[in-house]
Length: 89
Image (cartoon, rainbow, N blue to C red; front, side, top):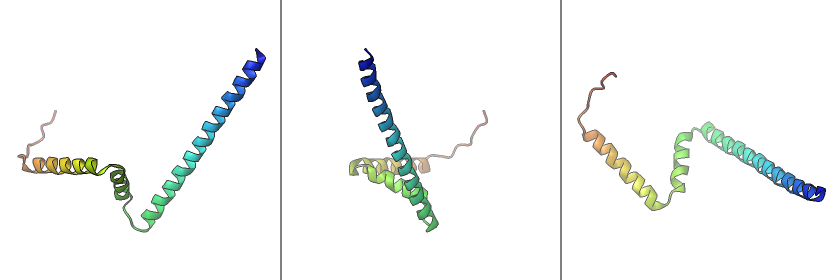
């Protein structure tokens, strides 16, 4: 029975250490991403806009077109609607 526990324990340790290594790699990548955005900001670029571009590039063309169409539709509908005064609750 101790052989089973030893073998299982080694596998568990292996999995845990692999996940810990991946967590460290993710942290390193996030730091790198932060550095790139800081560099872009330092050169005068709007980081919020860069993030929006990245988000849009992840979408396929149809999804992006649908998003832009709905955004335009909603903005026009809002502009055409009569303004209402906000009521205090």
